Image (tube, rainbow, N blue to C red; front, side):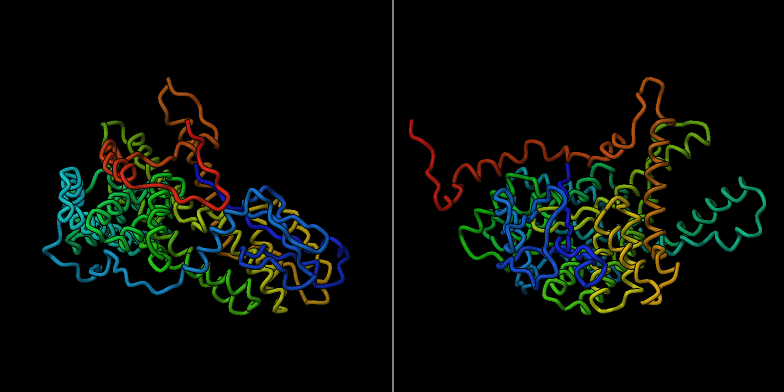
Length: 494
C-alpha cells in the first residue's frame, strides 16, 4: 500500500475578514532546521493527520511527537538531493541514438543471465548483466515512446471525412498499426524477442536495483551500493531490509552525496527546487520552476500513457470484439497505473494528489507576486482534484470578493486547459476500467467497486526473486547491528 504525504496550509486563524494578505492560504513549508514562520500572516498547519502535521501553541509552532523522526528524514532528503556525486550510474554509457550494437540482446536473456550469475555468486558477471539489462529496458521504453508519440496522430487527418463509426474505428487501428510497424523497423531493439509481462513489472518496481545493491556490496563498491539501495527505496520506501542496509552504510561513512536516484524524472527535481525556493520566499523563481515541473510532468505522463499501447500476448482465441476489449482492458490498466507510478517520493512518502499540489504552490506564489489572474486560475485548477478542500474554497471566495478590484472575469475562475484535460482523462479512464472489470469478467467472478479496481492494480511480484534474497539476509545477519539512538536502554538480558 502506498503511503501518501498530504501537504496543506492554513492562514492565521485570527484574520478572518477579506481585508489583507492573510486570507490567501499557502502551502505548508517542508520541514527544515527551524520551524519559525516567515511572518505573522501564515501559520502552517494541517487539516488532516499528515506525517508532518503542525499544531499551534500560542505563537509557537511545534511538531507532533509522532512525526518528528519523519520530519528529520525529509530535511535530510532536501539537504542532500542536489549535491554533486562521483558515483557513475549504469546509464553513463547509455545513448538512445547510438546504442552499441554489440550490447543488443533480448532483455529477458540479459536479466535472466544476471540472476543466474547472482545465484552462483559470480558478482562480476551479475553486475555487468544487471547494468546492461537496465540499459536495454530504458532503450526499449524510449523506443516505444518514440514510435507511439510519432504515430499518435496518424489517423486524425482522415477522421473528418468518415461518416461510419465502425469504419472510423477500424481505420484508426489499421493506420496506427501501419505507422507503428514502419517506425519499429528503424529500431534494432524491436528485432529481439519481447520480454514477458512479469519481467517488465520487475523493472517497473525497480527490482534490479535490489540485486545491484547486494552485488555492489559484495564487490566492496559501497558508494554504488548506497545509490542502488536509494534508487530502489524511492519506489519501495516500505522495504525494511533495504532500509536497514542503507542505515548500515550510513554508520560506515558519510553517504549523503551518494543518495542518487538513477531513475529520477526531470519534473521531480524541478518540483523539489521550486518547493525550496517557495520556502525561502523567492516566489518568482518558485512559480517559474513549478510551471516547468508541471509542464514536464504532463509530457512524462503522456509518454507513459502512449507507451502502454505496446506489445501484448494473445492468451486465447475469442470473437473479434471480446478480443479487442481484452487487449484494451490491459492497456487501460497500464494507463491508470501511470498516475500512480509518476508520483514523486519525498523523504520516504509519496506526495498525495501531486498535480493538485503543484497548482496549490503556484496559486499562492502568484498571489504573492500580485499576479491574481494566474493565482485564480491555479486555484480553480486545484479544486478539480480536491473539490472539498475548504482552504482552497476560501481562497477562491477571496478572489471572487475582490474580482472587480483586480479585474477578474469569469474565465479566470475556470481550470487551466492542461489541468482540465488531465483531470478528465484520468477520471474517465478509471470509470471505464471499473466498467470493464464488472462487465468483461467471467460469470463466476464477483462485481468490483472503484476502490477494489484501484487495489487490483497492485504491482506483480518478481517470482524469480523468491529465495535468492537469502544472501542478503545472511549478509545482514553476519554484520548488521542497528546503531543505538540516544537514550536507548537496549534489550533486557535473559
